[in-house]
Amino acid sequence: MVGTKKTALALLTAAVAILILVTPQFTAMHTADTINKGPGVTAVKMLSDYFAGLKNTPGDTAVYVLDSGKPGGTALVVGGTHPNEPSGYIGAILLVEKARPTKGKLIVIPQANASGFTHNDYSEGSPQRFALTTPGGERWFRYGSRATNPVHQWPDPDIYVHAASGQKLSGSETRNLNRAYPGRPDGTLTEQIAYGIVELISREKVNLAIDLHEASPEYPVINALVFHERAMDVAAIAALDLEMEKIKIGLEPSPKTLRGLSHREWGDATGAMAVLMETANPAQGRLRGATNEALVLTGQDRMYERAAKLGRLFIPYDKNGQPLSLRVARHVTATMVLIRDSFEKDPRQAVVVTGVPSYREIVTKGVGAFL
Amino acid sequence: MKDRLLTLTVLGLVFAVVLAFAGVAAAAGLPGAQFEQPLLITSVGQSADGQMVRVLAQRAGLNFTYDSLAGADAVSGYRTLVLVVGGSSKGLGAAGINLDQEEQRAQALIGAAKNGGVGVVVMHVGGEARRGDLTDRFVRAAAPRADYLIVVADGNQDNIFGQIAGDSIPVDYPGTVGEAGGYLKAAFK
Amino acid sequence: MITVVYRLIVVVVAVLVVWELFSQKEIKWQANAALVLIPLVLRAFMLV
Image 1 (spheres, chains in turn brown, green, orange):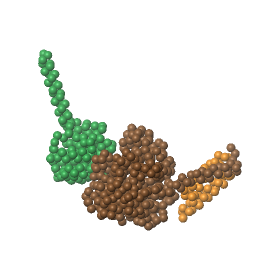
Image 2 (cartoon, rainbow over the protein chains, first blue to last red):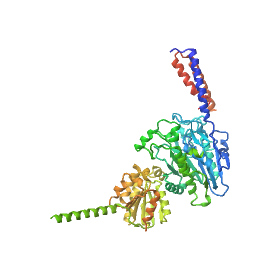
Image 3 (cartoon, one colour):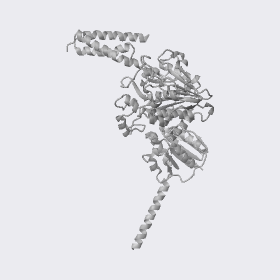
Image 4 (cartoon, rainbow over the protein chains, first blue to last red):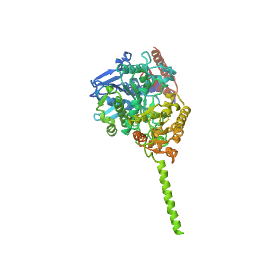
């Protein structure tokens, strides 16, 4: 077909129309999710309060302080290190909105990599957001990317060299917050976020630091707790206590040779007991079929059912999938058990938290019932 | 003739029943406390399951030492060696040892125990999730020479431990890791 | 600074693509140019 100036103009107009249609969808990702201050929240700070270099950058993020006012220890819960792992940040948001410490202090960073929430990983077909049904109606949350947005940190090097150790990884890992610890004040945006979090842990004298994550069901370290050697005791005790609540969790020691991760670097750089927990998210996996909001919420996928029958998964999986509520329940319950067990040896370090729904409540009523 | 045949049949049946029960008794659990303290608890495979057994031993009030990398020379100071079998590539990497070295360490430990009259208890508490080629290698290295096996039931779905135990090694199958602590405590005088 | 240079390059390429859009004599190549233009504009504005 012959192209003319008229057809060119028509096509240009169509392109502009498409731009007008899609632009709000992309800009909407830059609008922060609503997080309500629960009854236990005594202060809302920003990460830039701990490292000024983050002020007015896309890496700055809210830090919720729940201080009982009674002497005790300090626990930190971090969600959203990888914004495509929703049980981590939804679990952290639930703590912000429900937890009430009666001894010690609980600090929660629900969306650690704020930049990662402003985009999706390319070629994944991920939904940009998902909705939870709550007593107040539908609440929308963003489903982001594993890494910092490249429009905020660019370019990626060919090889990412971890500053503290010289460890070499693929260049795109330069935007992975969980490879950036302990961070650098003069590093990339991701390294600065990491540095801010480590500064928070040091300045707040955090005793127990928990990083909430998800991984694909075919990944071996799943439904697991990875612990720094300083957290060895509390991890083993917590695993046993969780088993008594019929929650099976695997234990894995943090490898000393894999640098940049929270469970290694938080423990090495500070005096905190550092742990990282994983639940299973089929929406991240390589074996999944259609990637959409339903998959994020239900974790139901026929391909994963087949994979389970073939013995390729590391978690029990059936047609009921891995609902988000189940994954959040695991994280929240395990967090509460870890906090409780962390002061078994030293009651002076106790952090006592009430108001958080139980595993059974979250699973049966759905996490939305508590948001 | 008929009476003799009848008598032989009845005797044969009784004999078979006795043998059957004898076999069941040998393949069954530990009949009572048989092992002495102090005990040395170590990991075979460097999974974190050893940490959980350490906590179980603490809660059971046992006199023990935990050393995930204990060598054969450490065995002589103890009356019982407890091997917690579970493979973890992360754990092996963290410990800086490879599969061959870990298997050799396990064999050396058991050899030292056998030579020194030290009891050997092998535990597998990681369940089905911990099983795999890596763990199974260590299971085959350690379990056949155990004096007693404690295996969380979920980890024996293929009856590998039952086959290893046969008629000669007492084996108990607690339902959970927590229950395994009870069997561990009951094994010691 | 490098980001400013990068965005300038993106804008220049977008302008060249528009020029190409109007220069092409076959509609399929015009459509091709129009499609290519969309992510270039989004990147010029740092929306993606």
